Image (cartoon, rainbow, N blue to C red; front, top):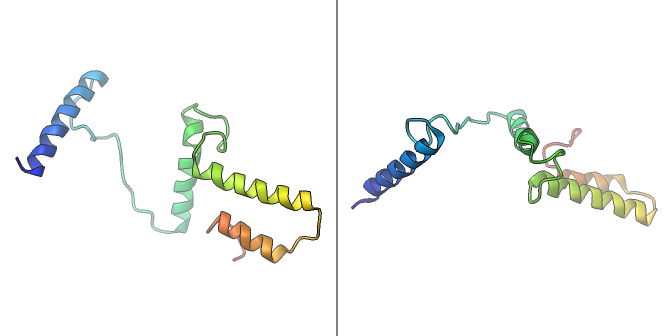
Length: 113
C-alpha cells in the first residue's frame, strides 16, 4: 500500500466518523479551514490580531493576555516585566535602549522605525 492510498483510506475513515458526529457530509477538511496569502505587513498584523482575540471570541478568555501559552501573553509579559524593572530601579531611562528593547519584543508593530 502506497502513502497516497494510505492517506486516502485514513482521511475517509476520519471523515465518516466526523460527519456522523457533526451530522454533515463531505470531505473532512471541506469548509472548515481556509488559507489566504498575507500580502503585506498590514495583512500580517491583522492576522496576528485575529489569532490573539480568537480565545475571546470563543469565550475561553476575557482578555488577550489571559489564555496560557500564547504569543501575545508572552510579549505582554515581557513588556510588563521591562516596565516593572524600570519603575523598580527608579532611575533615568535610556529611551533609545528602551525603544530598541520594545522593538525586539513587538517586531514590526512599533511605529517610527
